[in-house]
Amino acid sequence: ADYILGKNPKSMSYLVGFGATFPTHLHHRDASIESIKTMPDPVGCVEGFESWFKRNESDPNLLAGALVGGPDRNDSFMDERWNHEQTEPTTYSAAPLVGLFAKLNSVFKNS
Image (cartoon, rainbow, N blue to C red; front, side):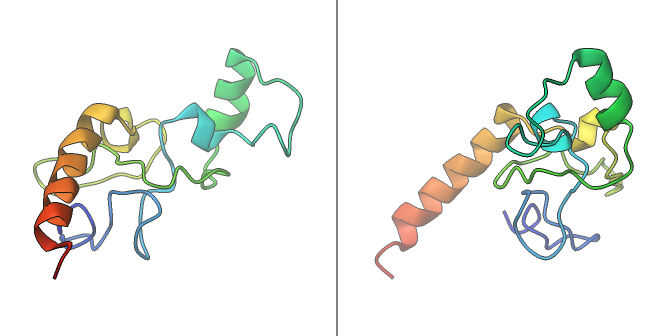
């Protein structure tokens, strides 16, 4: 858990929104395209790819609590939208962390 939350060679949290440094270019449509509240016109698939996916700017929407794939076996991490292996948040990568936090909560909740 410490590694995921930032105690690693990059000093980066791989849990979006946690700590001072976390991924800001997620491979996720909801993160990388403006909210319908600020841009009510629909964004088609091609427009989403051409106008939003290729942008260098950070994501306009924060997916707080999303866990990305993380670094490779050499602790290298490229925070780039196209890098789906490392920047895509998934439920299967988050599930073990949820289990760990649930166990820690049950062990330490009265201390």
